[in-house]
Amino acid sequence: MLNTNIKELCKIKESTLLKRMPKHSNQYYNQKNIITDNKNYIFCKGNIPVMLNAHLDTVHHQPIKEIYHDQDQNVYFSPQGMGGDDRAGIYSILQILESGYKPYVLFTTGEELGGIGARKFIKDFPKNIYKIKYIIALDRKGEGEAVFYDIDSQDFISYILQFGFIEEFGSFSDISIIAPKWRTVACNLSVGYDHAHQKQEIINLNSTHKTIEKVKTMLDESINLKKPFKYKEIKHIPLTYSYYGRYPYNIYYNNKNKKKKSKKEKEKEDYYSKHFPVYNQVYNEEFNCLYCGQIYSLSMESTIYEDICIHCESAMLNGEI
Image (cartoon, rainbow, N blue to C red; front, side):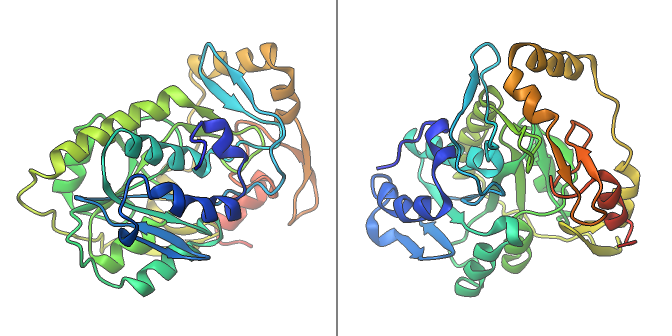
């Protein structure tokens, strides 16, 4: 069985997690309801008409040796990179299952490589034959955010936001592939990680558990939802393909200027620099940009991918390289 402690989940390699998860799922689902593709996904058929999704892979290839825990803030981080994107999502789903809920669940591989597992899943299951009412991806940074990508089903959006989420914009996740193919509404919810794809990534477990509790409430209510949410896509926004997924141009240009750090965010940075020197060391680690070759340091204002400097990432988004 898996140790579902967040520290242990973050230490396990994707390949090991893929092998262990089907056996671990047997304690929640009848074995005949667990469908496993050896390389791409694990699909569990439940008795609640909602599907939860998270991906097993992370961008970090170096094994985690040390994990530090700030007990006051309930925040975890590692010099090797925590991989909270998306082990925080895996943890969330397992916590929900351990609470006695049995939704449909899809664990995928290769999301960071363009949704490899999700693409294989919709090839094997091209239609929503299980009458799943909606899909929740637990694969979003921060706290209290919901991303709907190109879905324009306002009744569904309003329904999700009433649980205390704020609509934000995102670039890509597995539901970007599954929802359009299934013609089923979906959202991606925050699971408490921040600074994804960087070695100073953190997991705020308090934020994670807030989302877990909200999802449990959604699952409780889902059985009584009589009117299905009609799937509708945004049609009028011209789309492009950026470095990390399909992204509406006008949404990007309206949001490309980063917000100034709040007093609370600055206090958090100062706190970690003062109390956790190893965090400060990771925070200031230098890298060579794969495109321009210049040396740069990671920072809270840096790029999504640690191999590319912020100037080259901006050029990619503008279609210049």
